Length: 242
Image 1 (cartoon, rainbow, N blue to C red):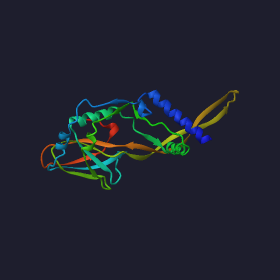
Image 2: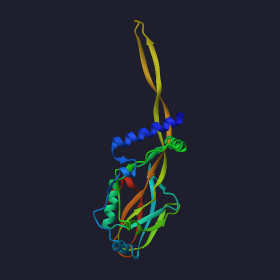
Image 3: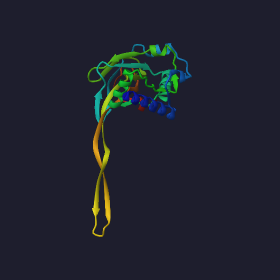
Image 4: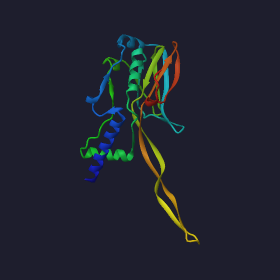
């Protein structure tokens, strides 16, 4: 019964935060819809993906605290021709995206308990849903990463390309000091005055936090035969679409 009460409190807290921020909703029915102003030209996209003599050779990694961590082995990297339509789509998704998902292990465990008891937690959705031409997400190329995060796209034409990794979770440890009490000391003086000193007592705390990451980037090939070395390491939520 106690755990169920905690679950209900969590639901109410999440709901309150969502409505207070007004940056997200909880059901698709509550979402508005936004569509690109440009019309999608499938022939233009197919032509941009036609065979060429260029290559993009890259490495996909998540960078934290000065260290580079390759994304999971055999991750799929997607490549789209960065046409004007694709550019508008990327900017719309960037504008109407929810904040990055970050959960502590305590929250993950509590959510698991809620699901086991049949308590449905709210899902954060953007206030507007971006709807694209159904042909757009079908015209792309893909490749896989190795254990070091390396990947290659060969036989490309000169042009601009949008690359995107799958979404994955990164675990990181967080450390902090938490006040747990006070050390109280009384001093008795010869004149009868009593003074009291209060010294806060802290203990070290730590938890593991899971952070949602999706790597993206726009890269350009300028001439036939060009082989460009690239790094795919910018998180979607920090990305500024050119």
